[in-house]
Image (cartoon, rainbow, N blue to C red):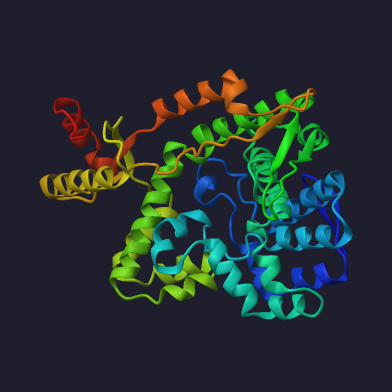
Length: 381
């Protein structure tokens, strides 16, 4: 089977891979947006987890050949790449942010979905499904999920192309060409590294990731839409909605269900009609402990609700920009973390810290009053 992809061109699948792609669990990914509510700001951002999964599959295949993996290991990597996102909930990470304490991560959901379902049955005919789904913890799994892996490269390039911004443009060919697998004595040790000739291309990946996060993934309107969706899910939880249903539904199905739940319906209507809350004000928190910060955010949210008798959401982008620190191998054979040799890494970290802010959002008609409140009084930190 061959699929023509907008980013990578023709992508080829063998018979086993085709059977997996044709399962209902994999086809469900066609109806889960890769970038959740980003389409409300960037109308082209309607691509799906299906497209991303086959893109990661393709890049993992290319990387496997470059790294000289044997035939069996290369096939395992291809299968793992194909299935790495099969457990995503509707609207991808936005559901997971609320439901992880109840359902686990999308990796855990995907592992269970595969091992207990049709995909696992197909895999077990010739491979070990459990081994494939646990490849993240193996050395060869780094081809997909490391800081330099196929997953990160595909989403940066694909998301950039579909939003129409230039920030995510990276030289994937150069990065792959200069990539090696670090030698390590332990079975699961070692990681992907870049040789000296690829340093600038690797730095461009870091810059692209930072800019995509700060200007696209965390655009203020995207943050507001996501926060409204989180409130809809929380409303469903409060009314006893069976959360396991999230693992089988797609984007449209979950919005349809949530629209019928009284405490969630108004939030769904706001999303569907793009009648979103507005940013009243933002501020940089001084609290650095995540748990204490969340407690203070909840206290501030409750205080605004009580005073103004309206719905107010206070949100902070936790896990905004997790640092990555892959290795560079110099021509002399010395291997160093990029954070030690690149001024760009330190600059990005400093810039990221400055941009993280708590956002207070509310209905448009209340924005001016609440905004004035933020200007008049010191915000509790």
